[in-house]
Amino acid sequence: MFEPINVLMRDPGRLLGYDIIPVKPLAAKLKAFYESIRPPGADPMVDFDERDLVRHAERAGFAGIGLDLRVTVKNGKRPVPWTRALRMSGNPLGEILDRVLSPQEIAEFTAHLKPLVESGTGGSGRHMPI
Image (cartoon, rainbow, N blue to C red; front, top):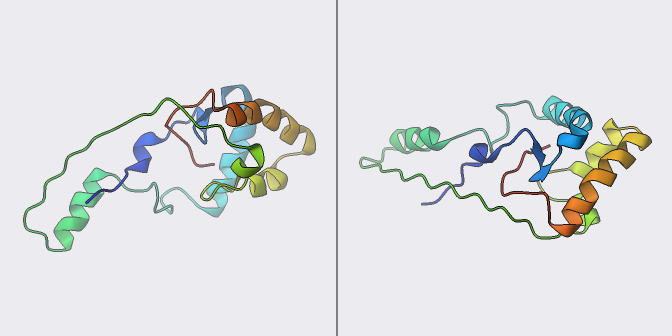
């Protein structure tokens, strides 16, 4: 059985795997909004770790349980059109931008992140949901 442990890949300096330090105050606004609609601890994709998997297997009645944890960080991103990045499943960035940021803030945020996304640079395998 295989299960990704997404919580291990969270990095507060990144969004969608891209460096957000230059626009961190804007990203913080986006994250605060996202957490207001999905509070920490309520996201089944990132709110568990390897210990939870073992505990669930025990509760399910498995007698012999072994766990091997392998962490892989890929320091490359594929270029993605900005319009697709705004609509990616699991990261409703496009929907949240208009609800949270002013037009000027959206322009600043986009000016920083769009070139990184479209060139596939400035990222790592780590990500932070909005």
